[in-house]
Image 1: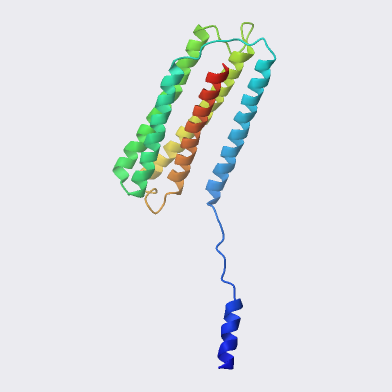
Image 2: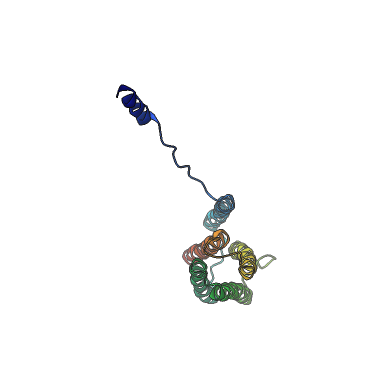
Length: 202
């Protein structure tokens, strides 16, 4: 009995191994990349406010196409979420369609931004040159950088689409499409922030 009690007492002091928190290394790298993008745009919007306060700032209306493009990118975010749901349900045929739709909407957003920049030029808002103004330069840089990151998102979507056709994305292998969805939703939120910022400070 004594030996048995001793073993029980020792067992009480044996600590159960604690679960370690872990993250997929590629997902961790993605979040580091997202944080760096946030810092980049935070720096640009802060510089925008500081420069505007110094004067010599051109006031102009934002292109109406920015509103259309906002709707397009919101639709693409919805189709991206649909893609993730389809992957979890192993509905591969519809998943391919959903990823293609998201890609096309992303491309439509970029085309819309190009036409919006053309409208700015038609309104004498230039990026550089003798007729340029810091207000226009900042606008082109901020929206242009977002467009560049959106292009990288479309490339990511292309990789996901190829992986889908090769049956490398399904309910048991979701890491790649989850990362793509995270990045795409981030780009959507980033545009909403930038558009709202420009509406308040243009």
